[in-house]
Image 1 (cartoon, rainbow over the protein chains, first blue to last red):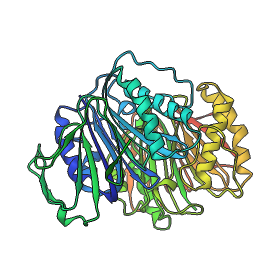
Image 2 (cartoon, chains in turn brown, blue):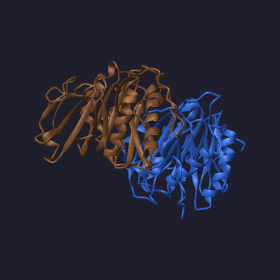
Image 3 (cartoon, helix red, strand yellow):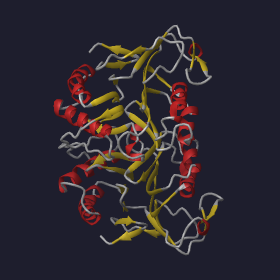
Amino acid sequence: MCQLLGMNANTPTDVMFSFTGLATRAEEHKDGFGIAFFEGHGLRHFVDHHSARHSPLAELVKHYPIKSGNVIAHIRKATQGQVSLENTHPFQRELWGRYWVFAHNGNLVDFHPRLHAAFRPVGQTDSERAFCWLMQELAKAHAAVPSIEELSRTLAELLPQLNRHGTFNMLLSNGQALWAHGSTHLHYLLRKHPFGAVHLKDEDLSVDFAAQTTTQDRVAVVATEPLTRDEPWVAFAPGELKVFVGGAPLPI
Amino acid sequence: MCQLLGMNANTPTDVMFSFTGLATRAEEHKDGFGIAFFEGHGLRHFVDHHSARHSPLAELVKHYPIKSGNVIAHIRKATQGQVSLENTHPFQRELWGRYWVFAHNGNLVDFHPRLHAAFRPVGQTDSERAFCWLMQELAKAHAAVPSIEELSRTLAELLPQLNRHGTFNMLLSNGQALWAHGSTHLHYLLRKHPFGAVHLKDEDLSVDFAAQTTTQDRVAVVATEPLTRDEPWVAFAPGELKVFVGGAPLPI
């Protein structure tokens, strides 16, 4: 199974600590990794078909503090599609003059949607097919970029149609919000004042967020499994969709 | 003026040497840089709104030998659009299940094409508008991915319509070929057997390609200005379009 990491914050924040925790799990998830950082409307998008444990790109991400309001990362254990760059999550497309980024954990069986519009998969994964179908259906549902609330309602109608085909833990962002859909394994955490010291579950590493933050900062972190030992991670219910804006969940 | 670098090869080749030459020119072109590497259908795409002289990402590109058949790089001196990540070349879109990458050097005046299809600019540059228009017109001209020859004929009709608006030195690739259009400043070079030692123009750095290549290797390099001192660079004529496949130019 692949592992997902998402971050949404009200102040540009780096994910060096969380990504280090994720990369530790890459021994078993060795078929590539990817991470996308929104900076305003712009996007940095790193993919490598080498393990996040050994990739020079992953080293850069662990040590270069890229500050972002929305991040999606993924480490891959291939289920469908060969190990190659075009099959490495997250995937990226443009819609309504905004970049969209998508990563998926799970496996969709017999999922071959009719893709008749402007979004076609480049690789061979069920995940990229699902992303292209989502983009196509969003484009059909709205003439121009709608509000976060409207997008969330449309996604709440579309995502169960994907979930029906198998396991569909998913992260999606357009730089304004982070949408997360839980199917089997997905957790989230809200970090806000008062911040304290936290410890990674998988590695002997801790960080004191109090030293790096202000009382106004809010950060939401989404991950397949909780990344830290001492924080109140919440499990997604099967089929649950959440949208995070400015580091906090919005009602859908 | 911005600076372009393109590479097309019949064997996956790194561009550490040429990119180092390009980055040396970044003192004056300090408004960001970007580089895209095709690996099969897959794509690595690095952008930074910091100068290629100081960016940790640029350091990675200079020292991590990413082997690719098609590369497009760009260092930017802003003419239109603010200095930000979404205005940093090269730009990327998907069409017909292939990624397309585009970089532009020059300035298009009063260029506000009607963009009514699936390609919208995310940033504010004339360049990204031109790319979106090109993708839109290619999508209209062909129902699915056509041959390189057909694509080249369509581009030969479209590019003069852009060139009419100003300076339009351009690189475009879909991972199968590298198209280069010269308007004012663009040069190319064909490297093949027998390979020898070459020296960068802007920096005291040389490389002996004979030690790294086989007699079968062919590489085409395109750059705004010649990057090396001792090789036969050829200037593009104004309005000239060339397409490189497997390290050699194809007739159009």
